[in-house]
Length: 424
Image 1 (cartoon, rainbow, N blue to C red):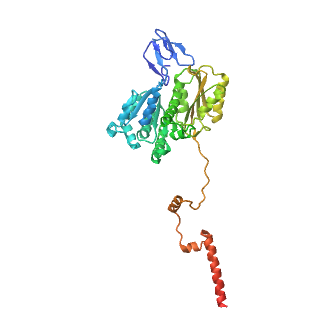
Image 2 (image 1 turned 30 degrees about the horizontal axis):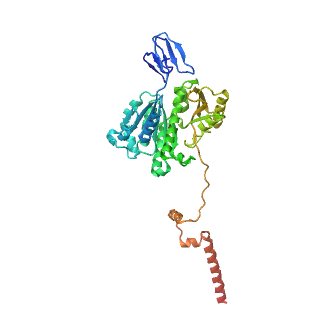
Image 3 (image 1 turned 180 degrees about the vertical axis):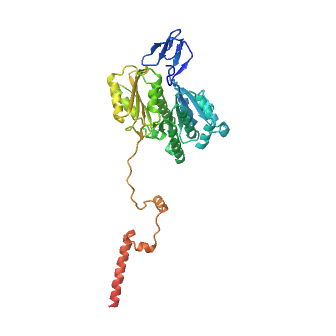
């Protein structure tokens, strides 16, 4: 029992923080189940820490900001770690665990928007980062793609964590289009490398903020929305593992759904009133700020329904049916239900959908060649490579200029008639 995977045995104690109960001199072990059960043992009092250890690791400026936001919102049940090449930004973090990356390589001055510098700095300080991650069962790597530290360091840290047997999830952002092509290219290259290093990858494109109907959204409010998406995505998983449930979901369930699954989606929907179950499920599936993904071919789905205890059997069935209808018929679906006293009259649906395919737009028909309509088009047209055709070749290939050819034919006929008349 003590050797069960994913759990740690700790020294005898008199306090169980899972049940807030005193266990002094009581020969029982507490298990985190739907309702806490007690199993008698014959030896001295032993308390098993049943909650998996989860670490959120923020890399670079964006990752550090995400961690700060989570800590300020009193996010419980996880440990936080920030790592950066910028010593000044690191000093401003509210996290108690901080690692300066590339102390010798960057001297605390940052990576200069160069991913290769961020990669080298992470490799230099990798042992320090892994020491802080320690014996975690699950780690979230959060960063902003397109810069130097986050783009370069995220794949290095993620690979080391995954190689250590830790379930590794990347949850990152992509830059706005107005940030330029170079940053966009660096982001795509970093994402490709990170996807190979993690078990599951969730991408939040900043550009999606411009698709929202609220055109008066301030710059600060926009980034607060991105932080909220990252917060809800990570909290959705930790709530599944930490909060007690009527239908229990343990770490093994999460590992089954998220190991080696590539691009994935984490969604949370919350609704109240009539039709709240279907509305919450639809909101969880169609998060407007997540990357465009098709869940039709999803290989795994984890559904967690939370309420204050007033969710009906019909509502639970409606949620499961809504999600099941949107994924593959053979998808591995794991369902759980938990109690949250703060959800008065509300119902919350958390989805982890893995093994999805990127949404492909229909192929456009091949463009027909057309004459340029502006000076800009003329410049592009003239700069494109064209076969060299001599004047003689053009004369023998009338299809290249039908009007000129017809005019030449008429002139030749008139000249022939004139010659015949002169001869007569």
